[in-house]
Length: 380
Image 1 (tube, helix red, strand yellow):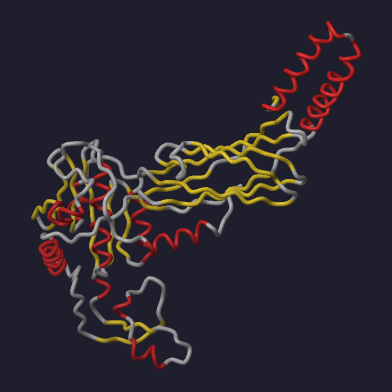
Image 2 (cartoon, helix red, strand yellow):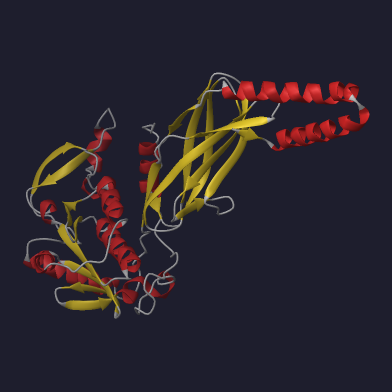
């Protein structure tokens, strides 16, 4: 508990009045000092009796580097009181307005619940903490304030933003993936199906290319139906592995995210091997988000020989630059992204983890889904 700026002013006037009373007599003391002393004493008593507000934090949606996310906090109180709310943000994120590491808001808490929101800029890959915060409440006269530490923190996971693979080497990359897949009865980017099996109802994560539109149009409930094939779709699987030297993790994460996104957009089931962290091949928006979330915490590690052999695609990052290896054939990542997409990436290995933002795919589907998930729960 401490005086506010107004409180310090009142104390200064009180001290000055006491000093002047030695010259002007006790009548001046009663006229000026007594009301100020009573007001300050009442302010202290009122502030001591204030209870801390109830604070509830909402989860913050994950997002790619360069995006913004909303931090939402609910404050519940039983009376009207002036307050100053401060919320600290960790390294790798910043308050969007001003780029500071602390959000400050002066407001009046009304009886009931008060909602507080601010935008957070996602600057660096990783898992970053938001909070703890503090709330300073004041007496009715604004002379004394009492500070309460807010409970708990919340986290935001920032993953690399995929780069569009539209360079001159993209066609060769597709061909190599198809070649490896055909030998292992795996990936086929052209998705040639031979034997029709049956129709079934659409399930979340199914590829839209499998929707049987004629049958769906005839259904009175407008539900989609999907074509099942006896062979083909279950074999459209590609595993991506990653290997990088210390200092190149951010560039590797961007490259892996780009390759994974490209393969998923090609309607393949994609798996991922990052050291001890393995993800089985799957498809759909939820799986895409899971793979990108995994890349948020990618660290330098040597790729085990077993993981290298199990992967159809290996992405490398070291002093020699970024490369993608398929079936023993090495493609410089620069050839996959082209000159425009390479902006901000350290493709020649000259500056470890020095890349900035890049031009990317739209993440609208993932962002919408994560925002909805974040609003579904509350962190106390």
